[in-house]
Length: 180
Image 1 (cartoon, rainbow, N blue to C red):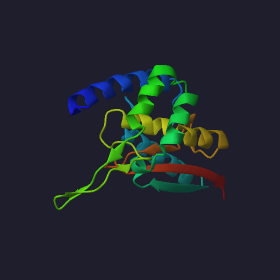
Image 2 (image 1 turned 180 degrees about the horizontal axis):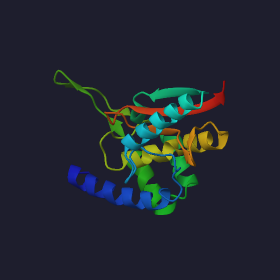
Image 3 (image 1 turned 90 degrees about the vertical axis):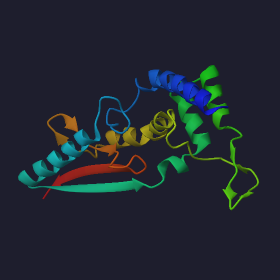
Image 4 (image 1 turned 45 degrees about the vertical axis):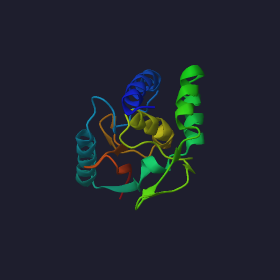
């Protein structure tokens, strides 16, 4: 597949996956979401911390850095989740075929390695990758929301993943508070 064709195909697929997933995406999702800035998430976190201090409520802020997150995404789990979210039929098969049987060759000092099968990870920088990553991790946010481990500013709930200065480093931030 040529690079130009791959980009066009990924744009079309992203639009189709987004049309399904955007309706079920967790409301706490901030990273890679149109109309939402990571600065907004940082502001909400800062405000929740300030509110906890003013009310003398102990706030526990836990950050988990999902290092090399795009590299570790398991294909089987991803496609199971896509199917569960309603991405089915020809669209699901086409997405699956983009990753099924994928291999890489490493060139080092003029020598090429044998093909190595790729069983995990999504392409960094590809148009479709951020949407696939959000689909993969949506259940984490659903679980946090159901657990009640949230800080609130009025009726705004604050736990979120956000993208710091670099798009390659994801953090999932959990916040909870108790009176002390």
